[in-house]
Amino acid sequence: MKIAVLKETFPGECRVALVPDSLASLVNQKLQVLVERSAGDAAGFADAEYEAQGASLVSREEAFHADVLLQVRTCSANPEAGRTDLEQFRPGQTVIGLCDPLGNPQTIQEMANAGVTVLALEMVPRIARAQAMDALSSMAMIAGYRAVLLAANHLPRMFPMVTYAAGLLRPARVFVIGAGVAGLRAIATARQLGAVVQAHDIRPGSAEEVLSVGAKFIELPLDTDTEDEGGYARALTEDDYHRQRELIQSIAVESDVVITTAAIPGKKSPLLLTATAIEQMQHGTVVVDLAAQGGGNCELTQPDKTTVANGVTILGPTNVTSQVPDHASQMFSSNVAKLLLHITNDGELDLNLEDEIVCETLVADNQQVVHTRLRDLLGLAAAESVLSPAIDDNLEPTPDAQQEDDADDLEEEIQIEPEEPDDLSHSVVTPPESADTSGSKTEDPLTESKGDNVAASIKPSSEPTQEEATQQPTQEEATQQDPQADLVDTDSDSNQPAVETAELLEALEEAPNTRNLEPEHPADSHSSSQHDSSPNSITDAQPSQDTEETKQ
Image (tube, rainbow, N blue to C red; front, side, top):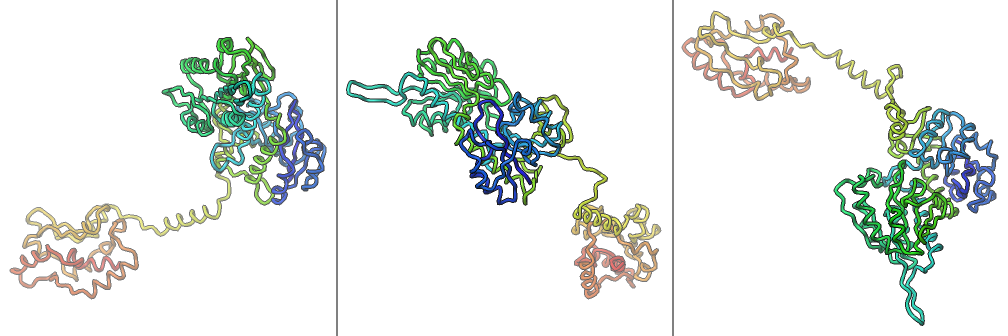
């Protein structure tokens, strides 16, 4: 399978999807790597380094003939310069990179229409197994680090506390809004530079993380659930946002640097720092808005521009990670390589749709958008996507399924049909009607219901009268009954398997039969029936013809 690394066409993008150090693990897995010429130049990786690791240098046109295309920004995250890529895609190709699927689902639909399989790195689930593939967290870490350096460059003060011969300089006060990956890295970097740091986040689990990196946590108690399944902050109600803005303003007016990182994927960034708060802030304060791509957390933020209002400098970078291209490319490349190794097997693409990582990352396949969240954004009805394929009745069954079907058929063939209720009377020997002078019958265990257990099936019958006892059929009479009388109720739960039945018969034949079925003296019949009402063995629980029934 051929994998191609494309040169980035997004304006100002200096990263590359794969660095030379990541090639060895891919080549060992029988993957052929193609690299577009000068793809890594902006990040500091020469073509010769790729060739030394076993890659082949090709033109962009040749790269588009590969099976898998790797990009930092795919055409959906590069809506202007990346439009030309749509025309060069081939059906069956796989594209891996940052796609902005929740912000630009329409382009994902266009890629699906072109027959391209798309794996969006923004959708990698936040689970332990997928941490090594989480490019979004890697890039957020770079952004948090770089935001502090941008603030330090524009701040007319130094970060650390400094003592000198004539006095003391207080340390800079930094306020970080949002304690995610970017926020925590910003806190750690500011602390390393000597600043005093405070941080705020609405998620309940953020306080411990903030304290662990040496900052003071500013808490806003809220009654609602503020964290979604992916670990991101949920959108608040307008009343909660109003309370949050008041809290942030009270801290921001006393800070030298404010770094905002609160972004909601696929939605406009929440407004947290108002123009009124900017007017009350000290001259020389610096605001770095890392949520500028989504509209910004600051009301006066302008994407990719530096704004000065009331002496406050407001920065709105949208691609700050590209300002550290070497390390950003190394981290991104490591994430992509781990994902590639996860979805390939013996040199071929193997998308296991039962794997949570694949299902969450896969956004387009089989000429349709397959991710549920994207389908909702596009207004598409719930379809039978590849993530839950329908079963085709015309498909040949698998060997295991065929074996199960054969076993079911065999079971149906050997199953004995239960007798009709009328026939069940032949399987029970009852006294003649003429002998029933009391109007009652002697119950036999075989007339019990199918759900009765063995203990219930051997329950002794009620005590018969003297006349009933004298009318009990003899052994010879029982064997001359209708042949149906020898059939056993095959539906009864008391039936034993063949082996157990054979053992039971042997035990019955060896056991002495003390029951006198043909009493010679009528005067003794009453005492005999009383003895029969208290059986001491299985043979005592039912007439002697049961032995013949069990043999059948």
